[in-house]
Image (cartoon, protein in one colour):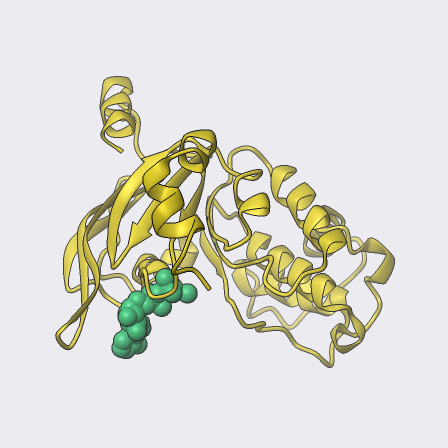
Length: 260
Ligand SMILES: Nc1ncnc2c1ncn2[C@@H]1O[C@H](COP(=O)(O)OP(=O)(O)O)[C@@H](O)[C@H]1O
Ligand SMILES: [Mg+2]
């Protein structure tokens, strides 16, 4: 963590995401305590930790679903600590949820098109979509990026679970995201669907950074270059995937007992 921070200040560059001393209380319970994280533009990071470690609360503070009790959050240099969620989305922050938020009665294409329209300036336009308009082209590109071209005319309710999760990634890619938070994207996926997910994540445009919460270490460690380990609302270790994997303390706390 400090190494990354030092390197950033040496380079004079701005972090994509910077949390400083973030604490979030729920009554007397500290879900997050003094969390400091710096993520570079384009960096891909896993946040790992057992149930209740504070991972989802961390995401909620970054997206603005919850406000931190104390501490600051910067997004590409701008202090967004108190911003409402839509102001963060406007600045290129996206998230996927553990539970799907899709229009089941619409086609894959319509879901992606609506997401593209929702984040574009023309969202109040009454014009009908045309195959040659820029939003429709963006829609087709996103469908391809998440490997759903062959099912683009199907209703979302007809898709396999894994395909629905791929569609969620397409929705997060709508507009011009600079940073995405993925909350357990591999949950409930088959081994084949997991391989597909790894391929999709590793093929995202390099300027898009992300944080992924993921219990499946085979997925998590293959799609990131850095790992933050959390326990009881605190960060207790950061490093490269190989360092984390072979760390005895990590193995005892996380990979060994106590993990669901
Ligand atoms: N909305 C909430 N109200 C009260 N307590 C919460 C709320 N959200 C999370 N918590 C508590 O905060 C702690 C961290 O939870 P969470 O961030 O969901 O952990 P994780 O995602 O790592 O499993 C847990 O003890 C949880 O019970
Ligand atoms: Mg969670």
